[in-house]
Amino acid sequence: MATFDVEYDLVVVGGGGSGKMAAYIGAKEGGLATALLEKAPETGGSSVFAEGQAAFESSEQLARKTPPTPGMHYPSRAEGYKRYIDYSHKRANPDVVRMQVTHTAETIDIMKSLGIVYTDVTIYAYEQPTELNSFHRPDGLGAHMQEVLLQATVDAGVDIFTSTPAKQLIVEDGKVVGVIAEDADGKTIRIGAKAVVLAGGGFGGNLDMVRAHSRFARNADALIYMGPEPNTGDTINMALAIGADTWEMQPLMLVPVAKDKSLVAHINGGGSQPVLWVNKTGQRYYDEHVALSFADAANVIAIQPGGASYSIMDQATVQHLIDDGSDIGLGDFVKYHLPLTGLQTELDEAVAEGDMAWKADSIPELAEAIGLDPEVFTATVALYNEFAEDGDDPLFYKDAKYLRPVKTAPFYAIEMRAAILVSVGALRVNGDLQVIGVDAKPIEGLYAVGMDAGGLFGDTYNLDVPGTANGFAHASGRVAARHAIGAIKAAAV
Ligand SMILES: Cc1cc2nc3c(=O)[nH]c(=O)nc-3n(C[C@H](O)[C@H](O)[C@H](O)COP(=O)(O)OP(=O)(O)OC[C@H]3O[C@@H](n4cnc5c(N)ncnc54)[C@H](O)[C@@H]3O)c2cc1C
Figure 1: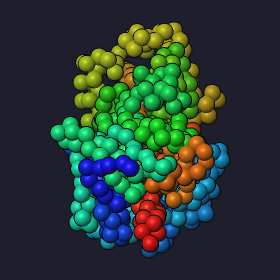
Figure 2: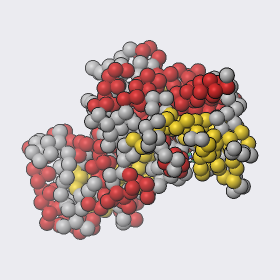
Figure 3: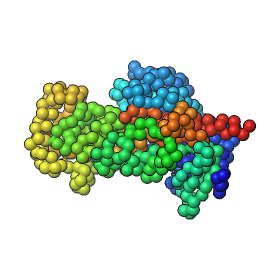
Figure 4: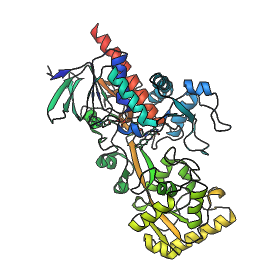
């Protein structure tokens, strides 16, 4: 018989959006004695960075009737379901997809009841015809939403232990009965639980796991991690150690980024535009219009030689981005048509630093500065300028309006890499978020939610349904907690 230092009904591991929602529901609706263990000194995780969340047939969508984007409509649950399944090439788990399209709408109502105001419900990348209008943007974005949810969790009576990483699951007779954690003083504590919810936010911060599970192992060293440090897959590994199964572990949410700059930097906004992109061979490699979907764009960049891409522009294009604004946006990080007023200064600073942006008065000199073959690169630029003049790109069929010539010196190059925001492939779960073992049966007492639960994706994060990850985090936390409440109450009678 296992012994414990302290016992709860429900123990939630991880205090991001999914974990806080699970703990809140467990305590508030179920009246469960609930503990939330958080590895970092503060809760929040990657959820504080999210700009919006997906939902289907939400009260906000129903009240607004039609989205601000002309000719578009708000998606039904059936449309959402089909889009997830199709986008994944049938590799998504139908039970998880059904959970997502059914339960995300309630998150919007709960957050509204806690005081959140939704400023718009729209798409993420304007001019992306395949996107569904699922993106619910809260005032104050994810940071405010997590503050509000934290307060609700505290008010519901959840005991929150920060700087307390969970290390291991305690199993008795095949059932999870607790967690071993390390408290803020480094002391090992054994916490008993009738149910455990894993909400550790995936393994994006663990390069070894990225190498082992993602399809970007070859260029893994070139990937930049932009999520929170503690999301190192501990909780996934704790479940694997007791026989849990996985579902499509490989997909990562990637975004192109100007090497080590932040997502809101104007140099990042400039480098993310569909200007001329070349790789280390000095040649174009894709229709740069792929930039409209940051996940697809970063997938493409991540597989280039050395995992690097160079965005090439002349002074006229730099001035266009400063005066007229970005051609495409990156959500709230780089707003659509935002004048990139800081671009020149940031470019000049980065050029002076000398390792991620370069400037030259001629194309061969620019090639030398970047380290590209000058002949190949000069030929690439000449051909691209012909396409720009003709308004026709017979190589990659890029839309003529993005064919900006590279003719007016000085010329610039910005090195772009793929950055990991979060991993989105994880443990195998059923529609109630119970973790499924390699024997195809639910592991009693164990749930995985948020980025610890797999099943929504094939090989790529789905930007056809913007806000998917954050929408999933909150909905999955709630559904898991409700199942746990039911199971705990049933066992008590
Ligand atoms: C910059 C950025 C922008 C994003 N924008 C969006 C967006 O607009 N829309 C969208 O849908 N998604 C977005 N995402 C992704 C989204 O934020 C997340 O996928 C989702 O909210 C994750 O929620 P989560 O609860 O699974 O994980 P998290 O919020 O990351 O929480 C996981 C928590 O678990 C803790 N933890 C980890 N290991 C342990 C352990 N051993 N013991 C205890 N605690 C542990 C971590 O410290 C962390 O607090 C973005 C991500 C980033 C990085």
